[in-house]
Length: 158
Image 1: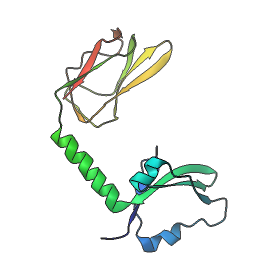
Image 2 (image 1 turned 120 degrees about the vertical axis):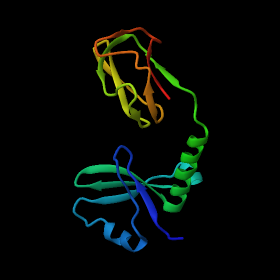
Image 3 (image 1 turned 180 degrees about the horizontal axis):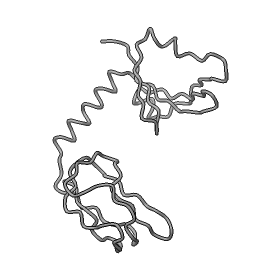
Image 4 (image 1 turned 90 degrees about the vertical axis):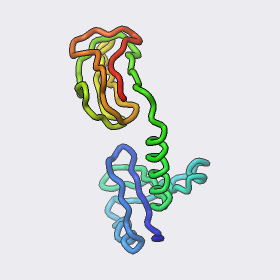
């Protein structure tokens, strides 16, 4: 077992896992860069995580650092649980009345959890509907320009 760390930046599609001997290369160089330990929450302590504030070139990031082995174990457990607890088709319904202004998917298309599916405009605001879990779009019930009522069916994901 190695002492690798997983460093995750929320809202940034980046996870790095440097080897312990490489960590020293990531130290701030003193040109506006800084790293500051943030107070640990009860959840951070129970999950074995450390949160850091990292400032580089004026950009501020909150990074989460945890054991790579623990992170990989959690990821594997989450994937296995999701594979064993498949649900029947999930029908997504409109939470607000409005007009469908964008469709990013088609009937039969595979989607990932969090992927944009469609957008509904209501009260001059565009509201994105995202996939709650991975699956295949089935029974797409709307098209661009369609008016939808509150609780109206939009699509199903199997």
